[in-house]
Image (cartoon, rainbow, N blue to C red; front, side, top):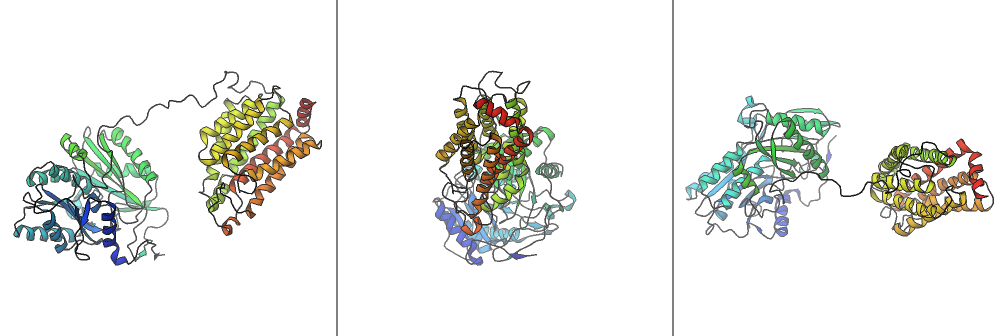
Length: 610
């Protein structure tokens, strides 16, 4: 069902003029003509038509595609941009005003992007720019026009009527701007721009349509669907399909572009690639698409990818999705694309030859630099080794089984990835234990757990658990006896908690993992001091850990907690996921040891204490 779109705007009728005002305030090299609301023209501040001695390059069209085209006004790219209302062609008067403002004796090239809805031409831009060009010529201006239609979503048989101007226009504008900046004639600028327009193809895929300011959001694309070849105004595309992995989407789009016969690209050609976000696509997803597209172009289609431009270059308001543009280049076109420009939204650091994508990591192996004997799993486990193995396996599996619920809790009070982060650490521990952990040596095993966590877990949790393990290792290593007593395990836990508190800044009541571990330590020390057997003390302390973690539901987070910026009303709905995770692995380890080794666990521990 449709619903009112949420926008950070004022009056929907003022979005274009207010956008222009903000753009010019942001970039000191830009100005606009004082003709709002009828005339909406952004131009280079240092250019005056009466004295400008180079070809002016002007593009434009309906707004809503920002940064196109106003964001590309600058030396080496556009001289001016003519802005229409959202998804509406600029008026003839506005186009004429732009021509008059920046065109000198060398003349002006108009780069016109044609938008169309499948077989129905959207002729507003073509007609309005065409009429403005004729009027300008009658006033004595030298005018050339290049029309760009780089859409490859439709079969060749549909003819030029079905082709739309998409993100490939940005590459054409860059070529034209570079040639003009070099001081060449209007004929040369127009010729190179036309040549560029004939060797670029684009196709997009969208996961949603866009929402116009002040209007409702359409639900035409339902859950789990994507649209191939969706128009940049949200008009229907070539096909609706089930959502697929980006690998599959990229392969389909590349085949459509390269096998459509719209552009003369064959194996062995040099190309540049543009991955263009449509407005609401995260940079992460655009980079994933870029990373999958380049090797496909190289290996499957035999093309030499000279440049890659990834970002949001021509959007459709808040549409989710991306388009792929491929331009065949020779050395001349590549030089035009690499030429310097001060246009604020042309990507920086995009010129020059590409170095290798990856190089070796200049670090030692993640495994501790110790002897082979200490870096491998013993062929035969001692009783302590068996106990450690069972405890570690149970603790890790408890975390693995809690991934989804931890993520759910963390979505309410944090960033939603606590379960996934802990899952990575737990799976790494299980994998490494089979190969590396010297289980007969408790101190070195704890140290190796820290190495696994450091390698596999990201975020704050990964750092804190690494600190936890390293502090426990340092305490255990201080004991000369290879068998660790219950008292020494309690001392190691105490040292680990102190280190986490020191570097993390948390203590009891902060809604962190310490709200589970501090009560556990208190009970463990108390029970051992009172003469309780080791296993029972471990189990009872795990009950304290569970109770402490559950109590976080009633706590207000402090500055060290993940939830320090969340309201008390929200915090009261869920416990702290970090505390619940700590309680879970601690409890699982205690119960596993009790079930498998009690009373042999007590016998082993107590024997070493006597």
